Amino acid sequence: LTLGDPTGIGPEVVVRALAGWQGPRPVVHGHLEVLRRAADLVGVPLPDVTLREPTAGAPFDHPGRAQRDALLQAVDAAVGGEVDALVTAPIHKDRIRQAGFAFTGHTDLLAQRAGVEVAMMFVSPRLRVSLATIHLPLAEVAAALTAARLVSVLRLTAESLVRDFGLSAPRIAVAGLNPHAGEAGLLGLQERDVMQPALAAALPGLRQALGAGLVVEGPLPADALFHRAAAGGYDAVVAAYHDQGLIPVKLLAFREAVNLTLGLPFVRTSPAHGTADDLAWQGRADGTSMARALALAVSLAKRRAS
Amino acid sequence: LTLGDPTGIGPEVVVRALAGWQGPRPVVHGHLEVLRRAADLVGVPLPDVTLREPTAGAPFDHPGRAQRDALLQAVDAAVGGEVDALVTAPIHKDRIRQAGFAFTGHTDLLAQRAGVEVAMMFVSPRLRVSLATIHLPLAEVAAALTAARLVSVLRLTAESLVRDFGLSAPRIAVAGLNPHAGEAGLLGLQERDVMQPALAAALPGLRQALGAGLVVEGPLPADALFHRAAAGGYDAVVAAYHDQGLIPVKLLAFREAVNLTLGLPFVRTSPAHGTADDLAWQGRADGTSMARALALAVSLAKRRAS
Image (cartoon, rainbow over all chains, first blue to last red; front, side, top):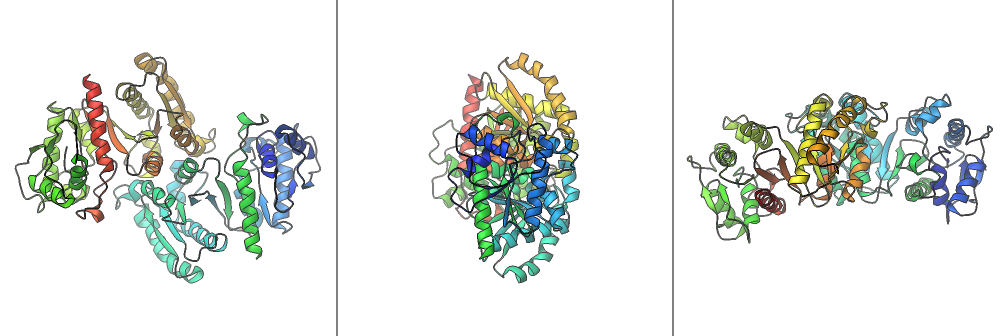
């Protein structure tokens, strides 16, 4: 576990998630001073954890350095196999950059350090959604949605449904990039020229690797498919871009959604919210997403170890 | 009322919406043969309506011509002030084009015929969402989202909330185009350079016209705002593009959503679904959206007349 940005809600939601925690004893990468102050804020005893403090102190005077140092320690521990799962509290991009760290997000950092291709999946009670593209201006999405990227995210999604969620015949819907999934080319050509051929070409290999029961449908009109997915019609959706996937996830599960990184050699989850500076250190932050992130991480790590 | 494409679910959902109808006697533009066959399908008597049949017959042999002729008649009646409200069943674009009619959608046709700028709003129990851009490939959205268009849709939305929905101090959220509403420019510049200045410049005039209580917030991150809007935090959302607005509407109200055209000199609504060819003439179509479209049309027409 990391505590994230000391000046955001990360420390508070970690303490809330650990209050009454019955699972394995966590290793927390962060400063005792931050953890203690968060426990005081919430009004609970200091959580019973193994603490790994970064060498440099003064986390509230140097929040960028503090979150960077703790995160890098934690990533090293995960990449080095010292822990089975990594659960990260929110980082503040501007503040971590002020500490001289070219940070574009946990997911990118983990992909680089682990040397693998990854994807972001949001896990919530009624929807699992992975993203084919992530933090891009909308105008750049169409060019970024290559056949290779789409197939890679589809493969990571299918593998996770089998390995992490125990589904022997997962059903995946792929959302079209354009409205009405391009409406036979009238509203965009990427479905016809890129997405459909890529899915058709990839499916036999995926079925060979993951089982003949794998079902992949799409590209489908995004406005209708999430309703069907939420009703149980699909086990996961591959969304073409950030808001296409996050709007339905957050609409149905604003507090419960968890971000799961697919493709890493260890489990990594995080809450699906940011540092929420306007709520920081007021004692009013909601720890549900962090608690779900922690519970999912332990559950997936146990499944992988068994 | 139109019956839409005779080979789609339009005739069936019209008959279902009219079964037990207690409101004003509707004028239906379409063929008796189609209406009768739909009534037989549903197993109800022929609805008690004023029927205006197009001159050319054989609607099942020439469905493109039939839906075109009936639609043009109905639009003339609405533009000419013969009716207070127009409720349209779904048209099939390819089939109507095969009848030599350059149709790009009801909304475009109505804007041309009435000579006004219009916008599309989806009305559902928990969300009202209007669209700043509509049927465009995703890659073209950013360029189409001009300051003038955004302000025009915002104005039409605010006017409708006051005039149609009786709100004296409407609260409107404007969704950012890019993920995280551009994240201060890191994920796109349209929020900073186009949207925010346009909203700031337009607000004083809108408040002067519509009342000082008008609240406009945005551009806001789309993934969080729909949750807040659905919880009652906003009376309407202006979405930047089709799927951004339609995904949340259809997720929460797949059957109940109604399409309302803003800006016309008469009321126009339609169900929020298409011709659904795979369901046509099977007796299994859901008439809820058409019934809601009819009820909303009557309610708004009465309010405007009072």
